[in-house]
Image (cartoon, rainbow, N blue to C red; front, side, top):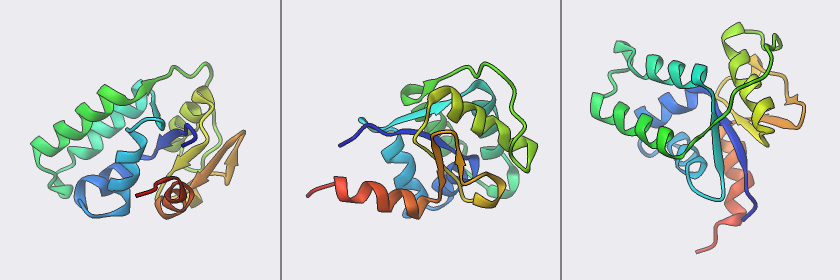
Length: 140
């Protein structure tokens, strides 16, 4: 299978935590498994930690820690060189900065409207788009 360089928006991680059988959980597990590579920045890790802990999501502390530990163990940390102001929501610029620094193939998000369709060589896609792209590479 081709190596995939990925950045995952926080809403995908939250859905992965809330829905064990959901597509987002599959996306996360694929992103954390070779030959795929998940890229994060310190700002993204901080947002992951903060949002997973929001009380309204009622995500068990054990599950939160497990997901964050998996990400810390398997994700590649990059440091973006310069600020970007491209996304509609300024909070989303951190994902584009990470994609830029990682030369990511895909940025997977549940909020496509917050991002441009492409950012340099990174394509912004949904979980189902992503599964459609990688599914042919999984053979039983």
